[in-house]
Image (tube, rainbow, N blue to C red):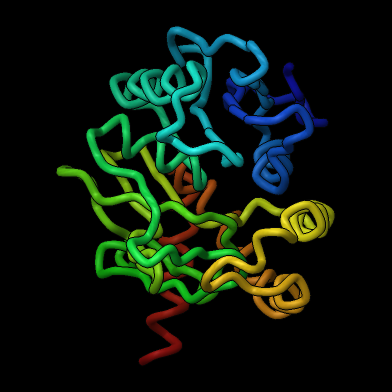
Length: 256
């Protein structure tokens, strides 16, 4: 299914991979449309094919889902193997939660639960690594809904860390990115997740539903601002670099 931005643009679409019938690309989709990218939405779990090449796409995003990157379902293995397409073609790729874990599996890494069964369900601190700080500013709190994490395969840079799950954001090569957390949730999406996922709030380290919603009021604005800039970094690097060049003199003046 192809979703077009309201204004006429010459940009190729971004491939959007979702995992449930009612799944939404949320703010990632909204922001990409605002930036002029049509969305080519596919759901391999429901039988949609994935393209053999991204020559006619601006890049790809694989979103999260309730399944595991270790599950035996054929579509899971198909998606993991397919990630070789953007990696070999050096096209922008963004993996969110499950999508990041699938990229790690493609690169030979491990995905699995915390040894003590800890989860991250709610808002948790994020700390940029030195590599991450050199690229951009990061939010200090991010939203999670997972009970598996990933290691960092050879050749992958760790950009941000957390507590229960230390590997939170990664980059492979110039154009492949993965984040363990969810910046894409709209208010309606978070309310739905809190209602439908309430049974998981008893898991170790999970926060209660009211903490999810209270945290959104405090932490969501900087997370949303970060996402807008991060999507420029992933999908339109010249825009990101130009904005960083404009902001650098302002920062230098502020600290001089």
